[in-house]
Amino acid sequence: MKRDLAPTTTVAAPTGTERPATRAAGPADAEGIIGLRSEFVLSEPLDTEWSALCSTQLARRLSPGGDARAQVALAPDGSVVSCALGLIHPVLPAPAYPKGLAARVHALATRPEFRRRGLAREVLSALLDRLQADGVTLFELHASEAAAPLYRDLGFTADPALMRMTRLVGAAARVGPPAGRVLLPPEEYASSVPKSTGSAFIFFTDRDNRPVQLRATYSEAHPWQFPGGTMDHGERPWQTAQRECREETGLDVAGPPRLLASVFGPPGGDWPYSTTGCVFDGGRLSDAQIRSIVLDPDEHDAVRVLTVKEWEPLMPSQDFARLDAVMTARLTGTTAYFDSWGWGNS
Image (cartoon, rainbow, N blue to C red; front, side, top):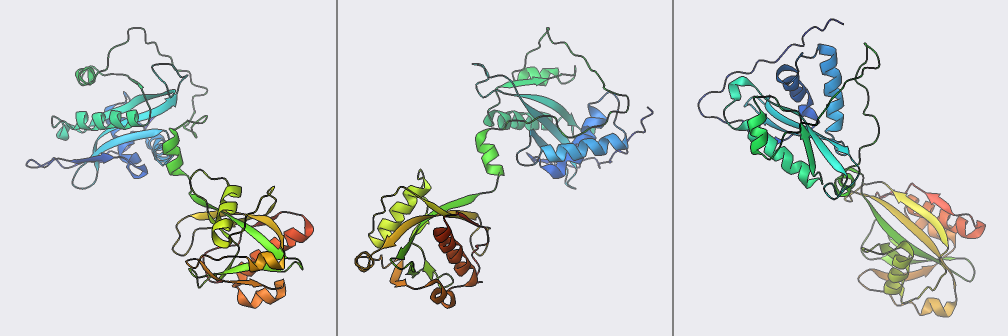
């Protein structure tokens, strides 16, 4: 296959003593990194199609949750003039690799007009530090004769036993999505996924199946609430529901827990996270139990017992829909899934 050389970006020679700024690379830097790798690392530069395919894949792998890490140095015009690229891959855990993670330094390149300024050492050192912080303890690379002194200075040693082979499935093979799943350090993976807060509530009725609710002092938009609240660290939903109910009403609910509804709400209003709540059945309260409720004045100032129909005009539509779903679950014995609750006023 004949490869047409991809056009390269010409960067103006630096003037004076200005030094390119270095930073961690993101998806937007993928094209610049691939350009440097093509022009200064590979024995045969990539054609336009291969450059585009590699840039697309690298951008994906530099995104949160991906297996690529890179450091770049930028010219005043924002173009990438030096880069160090590493790819994380799993290995079987061993005393030297306790997290089972290794990394290959896939590219180290600097444009000629920006060399002899220490940029290669700076971006490579920063890359190795990032990889080590991610739990990588085994580092690999293929060294050119010119770069070998730098690698040795940073702690790399030659391995005379290294052997290599390339097998192509077909002459027209093209880059595709990464094969398999790369395991990232738990902390980094956790930082890349959506966040959600957990909550748990107790649903009571009186002996006539009329819902019991508390009037909140903290929310004009959602005035009537079930006893309950946000989970504390280390709590399970049922523990949260019991604790919050005791704090807000003075009532102890012994269980066993019976889930009436799972309630989901997307981020909205002033709250940046989604919410996932469990509503448990607290049973039917006697008149004496209802009269014994002791409210926390910082959270609630009234207790009311009304029929479902009587509650409707007192509540925003979404709050009433949740109440109705929970009440239906109580009467039918079928757990409700309610995913339409949010922080708005509707």
